[in-house]
Amino acid sequence: MSTPEHSPLGKDTAYADRYDPGLLFPIPRADKRAELGMAETLPFHGVDVWNAYELSWLDLRGKPQVALAEFRVPAASPQIIESKSFKLYLNGFAQERLADAAALAATLVRDLSAAAGAVVGVQLRDARADALPVVALDGRLLDDQDLAIDHYGPPRPDYLRADATATAVDETLVSHLLRSNCPVTGQPDWGSVQIAYRGAPIDHAGLLRYLISFRTHNEFHEQCVERIFVDLTRRCAPQQLSVHARYTRRGGLDINPFRSSTPATSGNPRTVRQ
Image: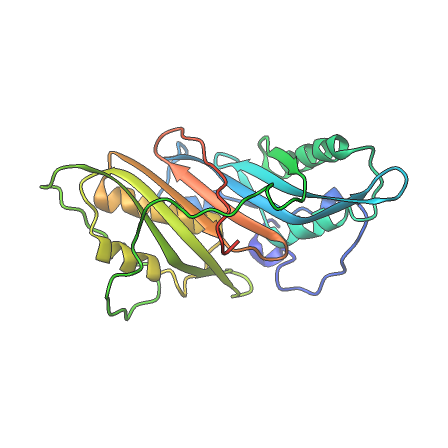
């Protein structure tokens, strides 16, 4: 069964240090998308950008090598890869001898693409301070608003509203107050979110209240971002919209879903919390 309850999450696990692609645990996206009322044709384009900070292997003489890895899983892929299984899989390279980084990258592409059901992009970087620099997310910060908050879940799309009588705007908004929970373990997932849109001005107070209403909600990172995108589309009817979340790492991995109404390319701006 490929459901979250059957994944390695929340279970005692032996951490193998030998390569085993069978450790990867795919979970279908379809059920959650059906819950949001999505048809087979998706209302967005996008990608899930993963960063791995704990990747190591041995060269042919047995000397350990390390790298930072970026993985790009297309939003159109039929499966996500459960994060603990991803960590276990990557850890399995620790005592594997490989000819070079290119051999490792080819193996990663093959195995991850098979698990996701679509071609996964892989980029390996040197583990240097300037390989993935820390930057701030562009946009107007929502978090300084003086608001009384009394609802922390489930998500409240009725908080979202836009002034259809006002002149359309191009606006990018940022919040660092996004929090949700793993649907299996209940562990918190902390993140920042950047919302860029063109259209009727979205009420900032309502948007911040809406984002905070994820605080006790149980859903995977990718599903939360798709919920935000769908709710904003339905409630505010923007002409263009993108939602990009930057979650803090767990187990040496961070997950950064990006969804857009146009076929835009997501960057990978590592934030100070990552």
